[in-house]
Image 1 (cartoon, rainbow, N blue to C red):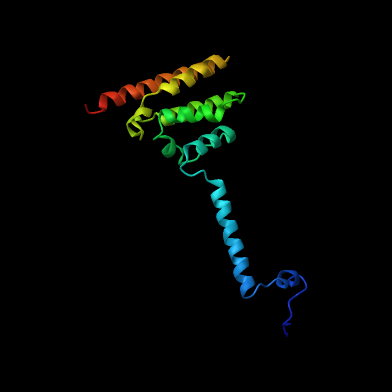
Image 2 (tube, one colour):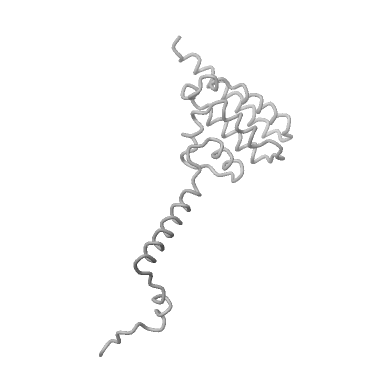
Length: 162
């Protein structure tokens, strides 16, 4: 049984485009750039505002979000006001905002900017959320977040050397 050296008709379209030389280099560069763009486009990196925007808009939480937001403290609340400004807020967005604030104040000693360790804007945002919410369960979660943030800040003050 002798095999034909010509490709079958089913493979013919796939073999029609065979870049060579300079065309191969350009084709390869396009493929590599497309892959890097695809990967970079799905990650928000270490920019706290982009992380907050993604969390609010998509309701998604990624593994590195705690690391990014854990060093922001009250700056996260300021960013929340920028991201949420002028938007009608859903219960889901408020819940995500509460999560963001919890992450931002998990350990105030780790907050890079010393003035952001105190939850001034965060408490103001929580007060605004409380005024917006009608649901008793949501108001309870807001109160729990307020208590958590205040207790974390108080603990950080106690453990800070004088």
